[in-house]
Amino acid sequence: LQDKLNTAFRTLKGKDRISDINVAATTKEVRRALVDADVNFKVAKEITDRIREKALDRKILISVEPGQMFVKIVQEELTELMGGQAESIDIKGDPAVILIAGLQGSGKTTFSGKLAMMLKKQGRNVLLTACDIYRPAAIEQLKVLGEQIGVEVYAEPDNKSAVEIATNAIAHARKTNKKIVIVDTAGRLAVDEVMMREVEDIKKAVKPTEILFVVDSMTGQDAVNTAKTFNERLNFDGVVLTKLDGDARGGAALSIRQVVEKPIKFISTGEKMEALDAFYPDRMASRILGMGDVISLVERAQQAFDEDEAKRINAKMRQNKFDFDDFLGQLQQIKKMGNIKDLVGMIPGMGAAMKDLDVDNDSFKPIEAIIQSMTKKERETPSLIDGSRKKRIANGSGTSIQEVNNLLKQFDEMRRMMKKMNTMQTPAALKKAIR
Ligand code: GDP
Ligand code: MG
Image 1 (cartoon, rainbow, N blue to C red):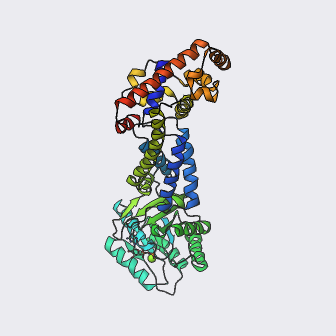
Image 2: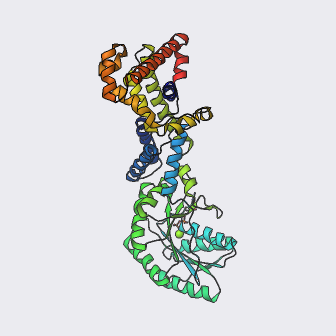
C-alpha cells in the first residue's frame, strides 16, 4: 500500500499531467489557432472536437512533454484529414489531358507553365494549350512561359471558341507525338455562369484524364466556397493551392479538403517556374499549426492549469489540509490518465524501478471504496475515525478493519511528510517540487 500511495503521490507531484480540464482549455486554444490560420470555423470545430476525443481517449497522456504530445495528436489529426500521403496526377492516356480551372488571377497560367516544365524534366512530351481567349495578353503570357521552358504552346486566332481550340489541340498533340496536353482556361473574378458553362463544355469535349482546380490560398474563407462551386460543376480530381509563399497560413488546404473531399495535389510557392511542390499533408499540418506557435500556446495552457492545480494542492498541504477528498480526486485523475503501470513507466527513472511492482488500476479499488465509505467530515478530518467508524467503513467498503487502518496510517504518514516538506523548504522551492 505504501508503494501505491507513493506512486499516487509522485504522479500528483509530476508535472507530466493532462486531465480533461486542460485538454478542454488546450483544445479551445488550438481551435482559435486554426481559425487564425484561415480554417473555416465549422471545420475547425469538427476537427478540435475529434482531437479532444482522441486526446482523452489516448490513454497515455503522460509523456516527457505533454504539451508536445498534445501538439503531436493535433498534427497527426490534421495530416490524416488532409489525406495522409501526397497524391499524384493521372498522366496515362493518348494523350493524357490535364484541364486547369479556377478564378482569374488564381495562378492557372503560371501553374500550367510550372506543371509543363516539371513533366518535361521527367522526360515527357508536353503540349500547352491557350484557351483563355478573352484576354489577348493571356495567350501571350502562356507563349512567353512556353518559350522560357521550351514547351510548345498551341493557340489559335480569336474567332475560335475555347472548346474548338481544346479539341484541335488534342488532334495536334496526336500528330506531333505529345503525350500530355495541359489545357489552360479562362477564369473570371468571381464564380460566373458563362465561365462555368464554358469550362464544362471543354470538359465534355476533351474528356480530361485529370481536372485540377487552382485556388489562391490568400483568399481564405472564399477559397472554400469557390472550390465547392467548381467541384459541383466539374467534379474535379485535385486542387492546386497557390501563393503559399505569401503569409497565408494554409488553413484553406484543410477547409477545402474537408468540404469538397478532394485531395490537394500541388502547392505553388512563387512566380518562378521552379516554385512548384507536391502537396505533403504533414508539412501543411505543421504550417497550419505554425508549429512553434501552437507548441508554446499549448504549453502555456498546460502550465496555467498545472499552476492552478499545484497552487490549490500546495495551499492545502501548507495548511496541512490535504484530505481524503483531495486524495480521491488525485486517484481518479490517475485512473483517467490510463494504466498506472504505463504511467509510472513513463516517469523518467521510474520505469526500471517499478517494473516488477504489481500495480494496476484495480489496486486502487479498495482504497477508493474505503474513502467512498467515509462521510464528508471523516474525509476532511481523518482523526475523527475511531474504532466504531472504522468498523462501519470496513463493512461499507467490503474491506477489513486492518485495511482501513493501513490506509489511515499511510495517509497520516503522507501528510506528515508533506508537513515536513513545508517546514524544510521555502514556498518557491516547494512549488517547484510539487509541479
Ligand atoms: P490566372 O489568371 O489564373 O491564369 O493567374 P496567373 O497565372 O496569370 O497569375 C496571376 C498572378 O499571380 C501573376 O502575377 C502571377 O505571377 C502570380 N502568381 C501565380 N502563382 C503564384 C504563386 O504561387 N506565388 C506568387 N507570389 N504569385 C503567383
Ligand atoms: Mg491565365
